Length: 54
Image 1 (cartoon, one colour):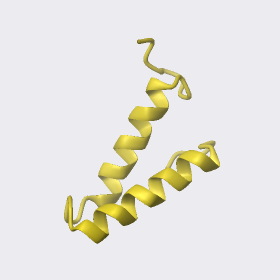
Image 2: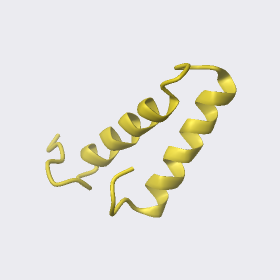
Image 3: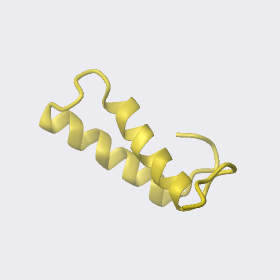
């Protein structure tokens, strides 16, 4: 996760990564997919420099 990420988002990332490993989803790409999901949520919530304005 990028520097400056809130503890909430870091925890969410860890939970997603472990969930994917446990379920066997996204074999070998668990970290990447979890990071993409969390980064997308951060952008949507306006927590990034170039956040979505939807």
